[in-house]
Amino acid sequence: MEEQIYLLLEAKVQCELNITAQLQEGEGNCFPEWDGLICWPRGSVGKTLAVPCPPYVYDFNHKGVAFRHCSLNGTWDFVHSLNRTWANYSECLNSLQPEISSRKREFFDRLYVMYTVGYSISFTSLAVAILIIGYFRRLHCTRNYIHMHLFVSFMLRAVSIFIKDKVVHAHLGIKELDSLLASDLRSIAIAPSVDKSRYVGCKIAVVTFIYFLATNYYWILVEGLYLHSLIFVAFFSDSKYLWGFTLIGWGFPAVFVVAWAVARAIVADARCWELSAGEIKWIYQAPILAAIGLNFILFLNTVRVLATKIWETHAVGCDTRKQYRKLAKSTLVLILVFGVHYIVFVCLPHTFTGLAWEIRMHCELFFNSFQGFFVSIIYCYCNGEVQTEIKKTWTRWNLAVDWKKTVPCGNYRYGSVHTHLTHSTSSQLQMVASSRLLISSKASRNTSRQSEPHVNLPGYVRSNSEQDCVQHWVHKEGGEKELDDASLKETLMLQNITTEGNRGETEEGL
Image 1 (cartoon, rainbow, N blue to C red):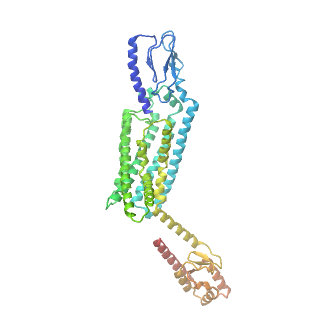
Image 2: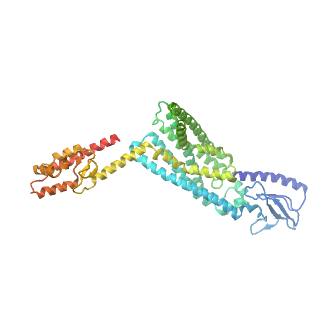
Image 3: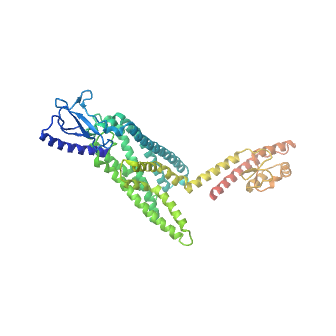
């Protein structure tokens, strides 16, 4: 759209020069003029003038012609109901016929659905990753703090894109789009809207989108700088530089985005600021391109060191194909982390037409929208530390649920497993000793020894339901065989101490 506007302005300047030359010739009665799209030459009275559709308008059918009629009184036919000079652009608009426009609409709708799904999946996976890393205290370190900042930047980028699509598209309706394609490109490019207050909301949405887009690029750069520093700096204090990284990721983009917004408000305050205004765009595009270029250099240097280490470590007696596979796997991960696809798409020329451009748009929007999902997998879900913490929590939860279960009479617990007499499993020797010593009645000891031979098995732990059974048996034999209350309290206390000790040993072992 930006190039289209400037092509029209160039055509307007050239048309004014031609009009000056034709006025000096003095032929015909209808004066030459520029209508915003076509430079109409001098017309003859009573005749219809045909002019080829201008090639500088992208969406026109360049093989067609446009028509104007010079009336008998020497003026161009004027339509009073539309308050404009009559012109027939039907052949020029053949490329905008329903079947062609529907194909283009399907293409853009397909792109919209693809990147909407991509950003939604990325947002969800990143939100879960932040909750996981934030929940486990052992994962709280500078490296994971940087990862969490990167996750948040991806999430804010996705949200800002969704908001911009809704707000800007609401202000750019179908009628306004038709006027852009028909005859009002010049007025939109030159004359700002009279009522600027209606565009305040969409201007804020555009500025917010550009800011979060820039912060996302710079947090990717921070990840590259951090990884590069860990590799090349012998004594790198990551906690010392965390505030510096935070300033680079969130602070520096705010500087040039605010500068761009001020320049845009002063120089080209038109519509929603969704169209670029000449060289002003480089105020924010140049720093973003610099971040992409610097990150690409860091990526190449990191891959070089990685390849050297792989070849040095496995130089003797190692399969060469295995080395290449390991290097390719590591490089693929680094490509997703460093955002190398950005430099690829930046270097490709913008054609805006053809199959190659459509393929490029699909690939670019796919990687842009799903990159947050890939990053969350690499930094969270496939991270060994995260997996270890999740496994430990899952094991503790299973043990806690297992100990709270009620065991029916006749079943016995060995360690954390309910079994019968034939099953001997994990050792809980301290629990066995405490449970043996805490039965105060001699009759109860004789009963447990005679009717419960499994007590002598290693790892035996009496369950709650089994205690109820013992009390029932003791009461049934005469009432003299009762458990002492103090001994029962002591039993429970020792069981709690032993359980906590075993949990500590389990955590330490894991």
